[in-house]
Image (cartoon, rainbow, N blue to C red):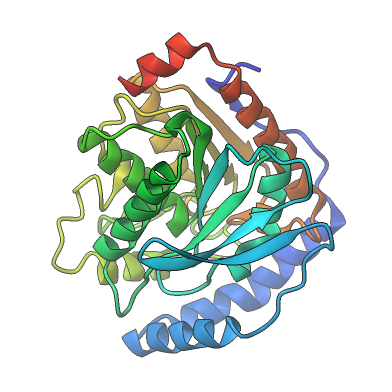
Length: 325
C-alpha cells in the first residue's frame, strides 16, 4: 500500500451511525454547550473521571488488560489476543480534551488497535487538567517513550497513536523528540487530532458537527494555553515544522469541527517530506473509531489502520533512516 495519499472511504452510511449522530446532536452537543462554561465544570468532569476508574469496563474474553505502573504515571497494557509480537508496541494517548477520560474509557480503541497492529498497546494514563498543565502531559508522554526504550524496544518497533487531545499529544511528542535529537518511532496514528490551540474561531463544520461545539473547543483552548505562547508548535502542533518526522496516518470525519486541523497537519507534513495517509470519512463524528462496538464504519477504520501499520513495517530500511534523519 502506498502511504502518502488521501483517502475518502466510500461506504453507505449505516443506520447505527445515523442513530448515534442523531443522539449526539440532540443530547451530547447541547450538554457540552451548557456545561463547559465555567472552570468548575472541568473540576467536576475530572472528579467524575476519577470515579469512572473504579468501574469495571467490559471487554472481550480474548483481550488481556494488565495495569501498569509505568514511568512517572500509570497506564495499562492491552493485548488483543494471543500470538502478538512482544518485541513491538503501540504507545497510546487517549483523548478527552485534556481534562477527562482515561485508558479505561478508550479500550474499544486500544484492544482493536492491538489486534490490527499485532502487538501490545500501552495506554498511558498521563496527567491532565485542570490540576496539571500541557507541559505535564507532554513530560509523561516523553517519559513513557523513554521507558519503552530502556526496556529494550527499538524505536523502529514503536508506533505512537492517540485521539483528539491524545492526537495533539502524539504530534507534540514527535516534535519534542525530533527537536531533542532523540530516536523517533516508526510511525504515528492520529484520530481526529486537536492540533490548533490558538485563539481562532472555527467556522468549518460549525453547524454540521454533531458532537463538538466550536465555541467550547475555543474556550478549552484558551484555558489550556493561559500563560503560554499558543503559536508554539508544542502547544499548537499544526504550526510546527514536520521535517524528519516518521510517516503519519490521520483519520477524520467529514463533518467534525476539527476536520480542517487534521487536513492542515497533513498538508504541512507533506510539505516537509513526510509521507501522510489522510483519511476523511463521510459524515462520521469526532473520534468515530471509539464507536466500533456499535458502528460498522468504525470497525472498518481499523482495517485501514492495519494496512497502514503493515505498509510502514514493510518500508525499506533506507527510507526509514531518511525519515528519521
